[in-house]
Image (cartoon, rainbow, N blue to C red; front, side, top):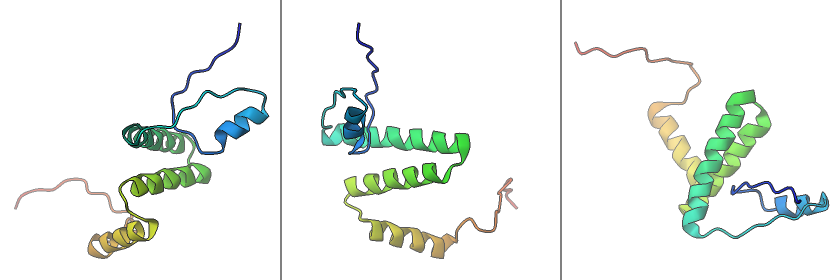
Length: 107
């Protein structure tokens, strides 16, 4: 009996080739636009969870790769995304001062 592992998850473009080099046969399909968006969201959650589990720089890079792919789906290029990030940082600053908002009270 063959061992079958079901995944149904988005993988990087070269992963099927890598699997083949290990002597395993991948079954793949090309996602529709709608499925691709959904799988990117799932992949983002997966990568965030992996980062939270180990805080690896590689996982941060994976998160960034998924963010760039999500931006591309929305027709936002990387430079435009970076410009939006900078604008928001100029308006509200970044997170460099480690400020924690504990509560707010009405005067």
